[in-house]
Amino acid sequence: MNIEVLVELRIENLLLIERAELSLDPGFNAITGETGAGKTVLAHAVDLLLGGKSRKGIVRPGAQEAYVEGVFEIPPGLLSRPEFADIAERMPDSSATEVALARRVSTEGRTRAYIEGRFATAADLRLLGGALVSFFGQHEHRKLTLTGSQLATLDGFCGGAHRDRVTELCKLHGDVRELRRELAELELVDGRRERELGLIEFELAEIDEVQPEAAEYVSLRAERDKLRSVDSLRAAGEGALAALSDDDDAGGASALAAAAAARLADAGDDDAALAGLAQRIGALAIDLQDAAADLRAYGEGLADDPERLAHVEERLDIYERLIRKHGGELALVVEHAERCREDRARLSGSRERIDGVSGALVAVDERQRSLSKTVSAARRKAAPKLAAAVRERLKELALAEVTFEISIETDFDEVGPGGADAVEFMIAPNPGIAPAPLRETASGGELSRVMLALLTASGGRDDRTFVFDEIDAGIGGHTARAVGERLRALGADRQVICITHLPQVASAASRHFQIEKCARDGESRAEVRRLDAEEVVNELCRMLGAAGEDAGARRHARELLAAV
Image (cartoon, rainbow, N blue to C red; front, side):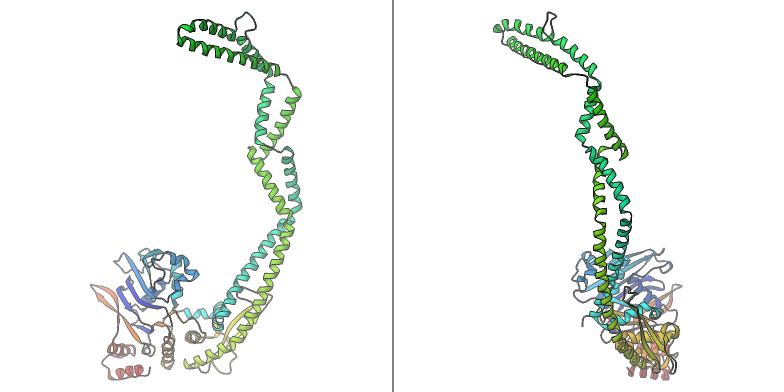
């Protein structure tokens, strides 16, 4: 079986720990130590690797920052899963079989996250770390009191195909909500439809009647200016024509130029340069004659036309009104007309879109209800089996008299993201008492054992590392021994790391680490080390409340180890 394993955990300057390196193995790893030695520091280190929140005051006094790093062995293909696509793109080798997660924490509590030595976010650590580790803190068992957690546990027991259906059901619920929102918006628009259509049709008709064009607008303005200035234009043309004309003896410019060219032509035979000048002046005389002819034609074409001027000014007034109304530019008038056409098409087709969305909503809602019935049936079929499996494991955890049941209430008129079911774990700690909701009845120790029973009975993911921070709180004696055996069984096909204060639990571990507080240079520090077989016996004696040389305690410690 391919499993995820926390191979190494490195900690620097985190609370009491100056430096610690743990080389962990598959199976059950126990971490023990005196109260206050810093066992919870290790749990906090793991939580940081999983994107957990940091806080001020966790950096060891005198240090600039704390650093936590975990190297995980992962099965091939994990990073090729779609949800990790963005992370895989930023990794140097997405086909790697190991991945390093790290977190730096400043004295102010600010953090920086890393995956394979490259910058990442806390969200990246939560996503990837959540696929590698299931972390159960000191109060994690209390999540069992939440209805959503209970529903997820039952769904995990139902198998992969069922979970796929639950995922689809959640998506369908989102689709239904989105379609309902869209339908409400369309119906709101349709309610304003007639009034808005009337206004749009009026403004569009006003613009379409003019059929505004930029070229026409420029041409009309030029024509208006010309019609308003006919008299001054005529006077200017006549004056210029008089200056050029050669029709009389006044000696207009064209006549003078022609005379000059003639005189030069007579002498041009003797000088080529002078002949060239004669040709140029002759050409100028011709151009002046042509200009004079054009001026004469221009003057003849000028005429007062009050009716045309009135028509042009009326047309321009319409243009100017539209321009003022729609933003001050002709281009904005044209843009407004296009928007009006789009809005008219949208409003005109709103009824058809309402019908289309309504049809889609009915289809998706029917699929959601049908699938919720399938999911509900699977849950009802699986619930008694899960309850029976939990009861069997609770017997092994010294809760043989406990009654455990799973109650399911279904309302197909109220289908939520998880379907139509409300799941409630019910427990009766003592015979003859009717089962009541877990959240109302179970003690902390009972919740811990119920969680452990569920973990081993519900068929949850087998590939993640399980980290327990004092799951044995509130128990002792034979119950603690049963919890240790369950943790060891849990570690048969996965890695389990348990921070514990009970010798019965620690003795069931395959590997044992001790965290010990010591004073050095006037400062308290915590050190972590792996224990050999003899050191394990000494540590169990300490946990039993006896000295390491106590023969009775050592015999008891060896008996605990031999009973595994």
